[in-house]
Length: 503
Image (tube, rainbow, N blue to C red; front, side):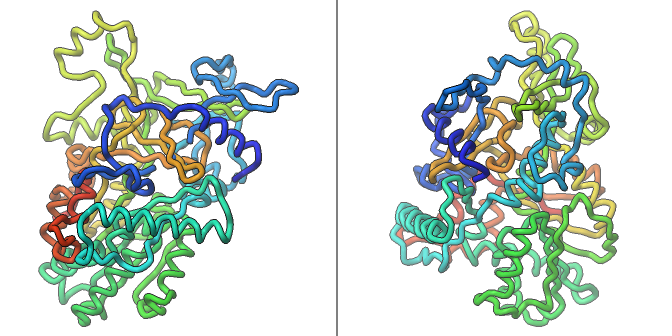
């Protein structure tokens, strides 16, 4: 924790009920942390998190922190909008303290919250759950038996961490790579080796880039599989990780040198500790580029529309002298967001959702509603910039991406994120992305119809989109993850995820 004051903020928040989603209650569970919310056999996955709902200033003599609704915060931000500088996440990288008296566009605030090297979520506070020995699904009775065993291992894992360093606000989450080790990695490896041998072998090496590799488990499972099944291809395999977080880059090296690998793959691996958005090296060789569960943490911009004029406004956040957040909108759309809107409209092969609704609703809504503006739409501007990097520096790449197409408990808006934290091993979901930087995961659903069209327009490549379940059915040995009664958690747990692949 940063300070006793912050601990008090967390305690005070837990005296209030968590925010409720605009969606109906759902049995969907948490992708990177709170499996305990799961129910039923067909699950959609998401991730568990804590909003600093605006705190009133402490009065003299008060021993408690009092909370008020953000809209009730008595503060005039007009002066700040005129005087505070507009800063970016890149400009804040060298700052050790969270900024005050600044303005930020939404995408920049999200990037700073998640990736700042000194206080960012992935840099300082996130811990990836590792279950230890792979689960023996064939000897489990059913999916509930798997859930019970997972809960036990989760508790044991966090108990061990608390023995070393107790942390009531530990941000612990899991990935399909860790839960279904080594089967998920082997599934991806079969796809890679098959397509490599069909189109590139023997004229090119098998070069694999992975962005955001977590603990490095996917790397280890893929290389183990290739070495054990096709040693000739293994000798020509080069695995390169691009990792923005120094802490996770160190963890990946420990995985590479650990007892499961003992440095056996060291000559085949390179770990590059940098942001993909800072990439400046031209890679002419054909390669596969893995982006597994990373799109959801890319920065998004907020856009809202005037019901009458249908003109957009771009959103941002002002951080005042007290560190409080105030959302604002501007009629001027910055070049990055404006380009996304143009590319999306030009590239669309099918209708896409907008906050304005269809043409009929656009005509009747202004007369029916008192609101002047729509709810915000969150547009994946960083994702467009990522596609630019692939097009400009990896022209011969083949993308293999997976992420969530639907998420429960999102904040209000279209394509809106889930914003969550953990406190004392309990998940807390909040209703705004403008929260205390570093202690909240901010993750978005991905509209694969939209991003497929944008990817095609940006890179000129052909693509295929399929559900995660269909991909696993095609490339996994699904009998490895079947329980005795025929249920298969590997198929059922990620039914709200999809895959995008270059063909």
